[in-house]
Amino acid sequence: MDRIGVQAEAITDTLSWHIARVETRMDARKKADLSLMFCSLIWGVTFVVVKNALDESSAFLFLAVRFTIATVVMALLQMQVIARIEPQEIFAGMRLAFFMFAGYCFQTAGLQYTTASNSGFVTGSSVVLVPLLLAVFWGRRLTRWIYLGAFAALVGLYFLTVPAEGLRYLNRGDVLTFVAAGFYAVHIILVGEYTQEHSVRALSLIQVAGCAVMAWPLTGAAAAIHWQPTRFSGTWALWLGIGICAVFATAVAFTVQLWAQQFTSPGHAAILFALEPVFAVITSYVVLHERLSVRAMKGAGLVVAGIVLAELLGAPTAPEAPEPVFEGRIYFKPWWKER
Image: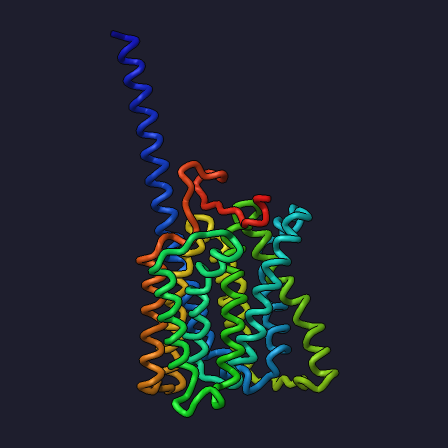
């Protein structure tokens, strides 16, 4: 009887341990979801901030100053991380930096020619691009809901960006922003992969520093070929905008994003990132008094519908394996690594 009692106690302890792990995991996922919503809020607000800042500064110089300040802030807060950075983390962080910086370049350039509202919704199309890219490059099989969602979002983008007069009057700012959405989609996917293998703090610092390293030469090259002359007014409004973008939207938000995506899939993160254009529209309505036309509202509605169909009714875009390779995290392997 004593032996049976000991075995029963051991089983009870084991069950309690597993239940505690599940509860801890659920708490972590709730915190991660709230954190990603916070990131979406910050990024949604910055559409208006950047739109105003570009009246006082050239786009590439704005990005260079923004990412440099963000790098300094992050380095001061994470001095102990710098000493422990490994070569593999530098390689992964620079790949993240490339796609993040490319997205910011096209998005910031596009904001010079389009509204903050349009920029927010077109950027939001990256949510639908995530499962499509996972299918093409990561070998994921898509459901009819994802295809339907992608089609709805595509039609929505047409109504949102193409005037009634036709394609010849398409705003080039919207085109640039859509290219940015593609880079952001790849960034979301790679974050989901690299945070399983490397230090989150190291990746967050390296990717932001990498953006700063890329921004300064591009600023000089753009000025040298007279593509984008250097312009920086140095007004308090510009510095305030840079401070908001550097500290909150970059140093804080991207660190939070990398931490939070350890506990969720890229597809689930994409759903929460879909709130970004909603926050952008609300902010632009309140601050800039921007209004969506009836045609644009139809397009925006279709984009949101596409996101819902693709992400909520479709299969998860990054599967949670029953036996995850990295304990308690999501893992998926690109098709080129399976060869």
